[in-house]
Length: 408
Image 1 (spheres, helix red, strand yellow):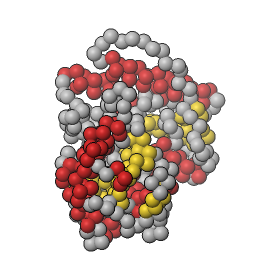
Image 2 (cartoon, one colour):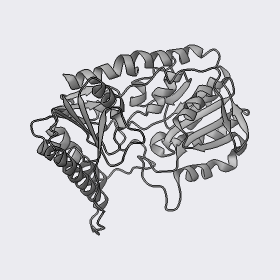
Image 3 (cartoon, helix red, strand yellow):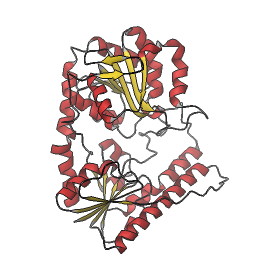
Image 4 (cartoon, one colour):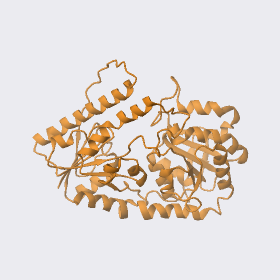
């Protein structure tokens, strides 16, 4: 077969399945905006170029949403031009798999009408059970906000309508889509390399600035998010820290994440969410036991979770982070928000501990209790890893399902 992947950050979620399909003898091509850091074996990579943005003043209450849709259309056109070049060079795929989130899937059907069209459907906005309106601190419902969400879904609807098959990672993500789209969806996670993400009693992490080294058994609380932002509960975690420090005066807290706004609204001008919520509680904290690590190489992050005594994961009802599943595979003792995507993988007091997303006092007590009773909670760690091995293992579970989907 000839298989084309389209993803602005190719390979993205397609890294493992694209490699596996190429190794099985299929001709695989990936389209993206940048050359990947490392080439995939036997996979040809094509770069498409986004045209320079033209600043255009839009005097309309939905100007932001309109500019967002315009950007998706422009990206879709750029990806379609790259596909057209492939077609003229003689490459006509049997299957096109495109991530629908950035507009690249919009015109794939027009370039390759005979190909089976697949989309990676990561999220659909506006569900009452989803992220919209979940946190009233940052979202004020109004007719205008609902209209903006409708526009935000426009390119997703076109891509879903044009596809033969959609793929998504979790049942929660599937449930956020319209019923008619769910009928053509399969739920297969990208998979976790459980051989790589596993417990290691000899792991250690050294922090140069405070000159501290942490090992398994140390009282270390970890919090990991790509960006330190409200969508991933950074504000809730920070507000829980003053009480947690009182309850556990020897605990060290390590926060991993960049300063971008991520999926959340932008912070006040000239500030980051990290600064905003740190400043809110700074005078109540012993900063010698709070460590902001920024972004870490994946290997260092893995060792950090291997030494973690308690790993905290908080999220709106949104896309589940890979970091949670990796932490569970490592055998972390996880304290997580009692939100729908988390409940899909964590059952309270069986393979982790859940707490109300907004209850900062309950979160502090839950983490403190977990630190105090860490040895007796060992079965939760073992059950967390067993859950990932059984349901999300890359080699034995997820990758064979993905390959079968394409070859079928």
